[in-house]
Image 1 (tube, rainbow, N blue to C red):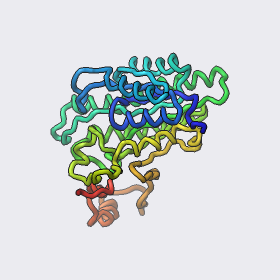
Image 2 (image 1 turned 30 degrees about the vertical axis):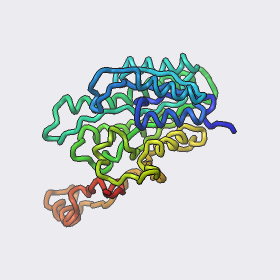
Image 3 (image 1 turned 90 degrees about the vertical axis):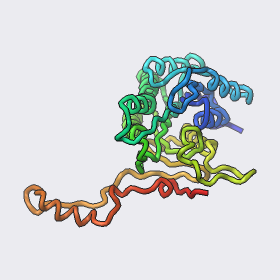
Image 4 (image 1 turned 45 degrees about the vertical axis):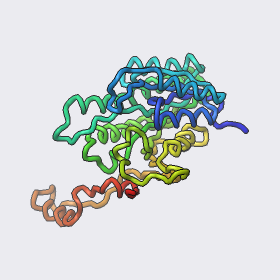
Length: 313
């Protein structure tokens, strides 16, 4: 049986554990050669000593199953490290075809308690990290196209979160970064389409060390039953978006967890008001907008359980 990613090479960042690990294993299962990137720090806040162990373990797991993989230890939020990462894929496998951005950290705090460092650190790893690898991958693909290579193939899969869609009171840094990633994705999709490259983003629901607080207290499967929040349920969508079958999918945002994929529509205008004069006055706006918002929840926000569609067990 032919494999949809046979002959392609991929980078997966943050692939030493959890969601990234599941994605790297799935891409390899579908035939891709994989660069497994991870900084290897044990703390989900990015603390602790860097270690090649997690990335090496996943790369060895791929090789033991008959696939091709190399490990890369490095912080993708560092510009030169991201350059080296893309360079490793090209030197090890001849080219880069797929980039999956997954690396991230958490430093949760309410906005009135958050320090500058807690803000900067999360924006740096998530948003700048996505930009850094995307930049060097885009340079690689554009260079090949400019050199006259026919049929350049490129796929970017970025990791956003429903925290940006619904808000997350204790994660203003994380929610902002994940919203920025969606903007980066749609911009990249427009810029690179002419070179044969697609860029899409996913909002995964997965039980990992990054989300242990989010899903604490929510129903877990009975013994022997599959966990709908297992990272392995997210990975097939990443494999699909990385494949030739998804050539027509570009600039999209998809929510995914076990047994469900939801395509998120772009924001729509919910109501429109026109001034009866040459320009709005305060009084006219008060007369139009105040009745419209009367009785509505502030900002139309929803509780996390409602957005996630989950029930505590």
